[in-house]
Structures are given as C-alpha cells and as structure tokens.
Amino acid sequence: MEKRDVVIIGGGPAGRVIVHSLHAQKAGRSVALIKNEEINVNRCAIPYGIPESEPIEKFVVSNKLVTDFGADLIVDEVVEIDPSKREVYTQAGEIYVYNDLILATGSRPLIPPIPGVESGPITPVRTLGNLSRLREYAAKNRKAVIIGGGYIGIELAVVLREMGLEVSIVEMLPKVLLATTEPEFIGQVEKTLTENGLELLTNRKVVEFAARNGGGVDVLLDGGDSISADFAVLSVGVVPNIELATQAGLKTSRLGIQTDQYMRTSEDHIYAAGDCVEKISFITGEPTRGEFGTNAVFMANVVAQNILGKKKIFPGVINASATSVYDWSLGAAGLTEKMAQESGINTVTGYSEVLDKYPMMKGVTPIRTKLVFDRNTGRLVGGSVLQKGDGAAQNADFISFAIQMKATLEDLLTCQYATHPELAAKPSDNTYMFAAKDALARK
Image 1: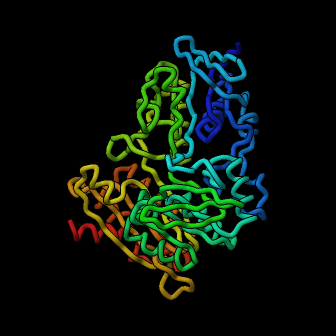
Image 2: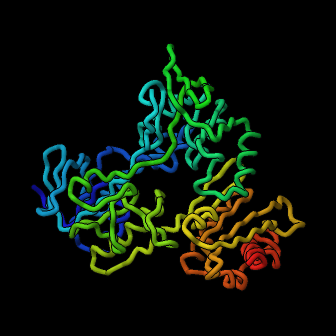
Image 3: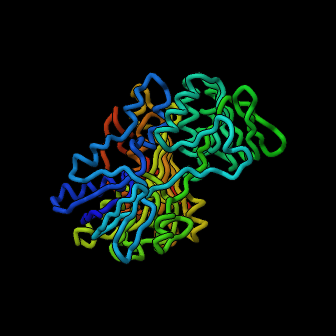
C-alpha cells in the first residue's frame, strides 16, 4: 500500500495538465499518475501520422511530460475505487491511498453494433496500435472506406487520398460535418472533397461488414449497395469511460461523470476532467457533448486550482474547434443555428463574405462568416468561419472569446480591429462587423 496526496487516473491531456499545474505552483504535493497505455499517441494528430514518410515517434506523447514534472508514473490498470477508504486498486495488485483523486479516464471509440464489425481489416482511430495498423494498411493497399464524416473522418480521408488511395466516406447524416459546421459552408467542403476524387455517400448507413477471402472487407449499405475495400476505418464518435466511476457509486449519465462547477464529483475528494465528464454548455447551462482536448485542458486547470483550495469555477464548454480540408480551413465556436433553435433560443443570424486582404493584393481570397445571436438579448451564441488558408482557428478563437465575454450584436458593431494590405481586410470590411450588420438588418 502506498499513499499519495494526489492520484490521477488517466494519461491524456487532462491528467498531464493537472501534473503540470501542481508542479508549476510548487504545491509540494506527492502525485501519482496511473495510466493503462505504455505509450500514448497524440489522438488529434493520428490522421497526419499515417504516411510512413513521417516517423511514428513524432506522434507519440513522451512519458517525460509526467515524470519530468514531479509525478510518479505508474503503468497499470485501475480495477476498483473505494471512496470510503480513499483507496485505488490496480490489476497488478497494488493499492494507492489518496487525499484527492482525479478521474481523467477519457473516452474510447464507439464501435457500432453492426454485424461483422469485429472481423476483417477494420480499425477505430484512438491508440498507438490503431495508428500503426493504419500505417500498415495504407502502405500496402489501394482502397479505403471511412465510416463517419466528422472532423477525424474527413481528415483521415484527405490524408489517405493524398497518399494515392481510393477513398469512400459513408455518413448517415445528410451532409458531412453537420455536428460542427453550418450548412451554408458544407457545400464548399463537399465540392472540394469530390473534386479531389473522394466519394461521398451521405444519408447512408452501414448494415454489415463481411471479411473477404484473401483479404479486404465488403461494406454493405442500406438499400442493397456494397463497397469492396482493402480496409475500413471507424470514426463515428466516442463513449466516455465511466465504468470506474459507476462502480464507485458516483453519479453519472450517458454523457459522462457528473460534476459540479468546481469539477467535484458526487463523492468527497474525487474530481473528474476530460472526455469522461458530462459537459455543461456555457451558453445554455444544459448537458452537452464536447470531446475536445482543449476542453480537457480547461477543466484540468480548474481541478488543479481547487485541489489547492482556490475555489475556481468552470463555466461550461463553448466547444471552439477547427479543421482543414485541402486548402480550406473551417472554424466554429458555440452553437450552430440549428443547435440554438433546438435549445429554445429565438435566433437571428448574420452572414458576411469579405476579402482577407486588400483587393489589389496577390492571393486575395474570401472569408465567409456566419454569426448566431439570441434575438431577445442580442448575445452572440455561436459563429462559424470558412476561408482559404489556415486562419480559421484564430477566427474561431475570437468568436469563442466573444461568447465567453457575453458580447452582443452591438458590441461587435463597435469592436476595434487591425488592418493591413497583406494581413487583413480593408478598414471598412471587417468580417465580424459585416456579419453583425447583416444580423441587425434581419432583427
């Protein structure tokens, strides 16, 4: 039996950030981090690690990010927690006594209950083993099917296509990226994908996988169609790892471990952060999804402060996000118009399309912006950007911060901004101000 002031279960971004925060503040706490993977991979970067021209070592997370920051690293599987004794039990038979425990157990890939899903060359996208398998499949084969048209699915498809493979994307919704992206922007994304040779099969469901003799897999779709491929990739979402929390009697839901605004669970001295937690929307105050590494970091920082007695509140997730599709980038934060309406918000939206540089400059391209406001209060509740190049993430950051500061339509009409012939739109053409003006005209 060993005792630590802080025990963290999970080696993802939430666990590592708590280690770093406690170390940076010279907290003087003894810390142990227990994880069940010898080596973690940077999950968001998996699509970009598939080409064998890139060393796989670039895409792993060094264990020094734990051990160099004053924590003991234990590679083991936690099998039980006893909150009454403040004890953690591992598969190797060890017992760790804690003063504060953090569950940062993350999530796992959703494996849909489709016949044949466990047979043939089919892989999810999550671990170093998954990345190794994808590298092997892509290097030896010619045809891939991606199940799921979200961020990761699209990024995988683009990388595999750039490697010379034939790629089909099967998405059960009417369009790709609908969970994060405004419909007005998806048309351009889908056009770009098809122009680059990707096959989009939207509004279609996979009903069966059948391993082929000699290798490969047949993907059977509703309606009787099928796709013959060398391998298939599952990218249809994740499931929070709440089994330890449930076994320990903590309150949970299908969205994760329930916490209060201080990230405390229903048991004293147990906190939770990251994908395993039920998120609360900053905008609506209701439970929501939000399995982004950034959310894990934000929650982890709050946990570390509260362990140190500083009473820090986590205000909820805004879900700022970004991705790229060939030479386009997309960014979003807050609620889409559809999400806002489904949450009962009376919306008014504004759209703008301005040039990203002065019109006489070389390489000028449009920035398209959609902002969603609460018609009754004027508050910004969401926004999306589509543009050429890699600037959409910064635009998503601005929208996210404006939401966090509870900015209104009037605030955006009067915000002050920079301009430069090569770096920004001409002085009169700020994309947010134009979108706000459009919303004002519709109000």
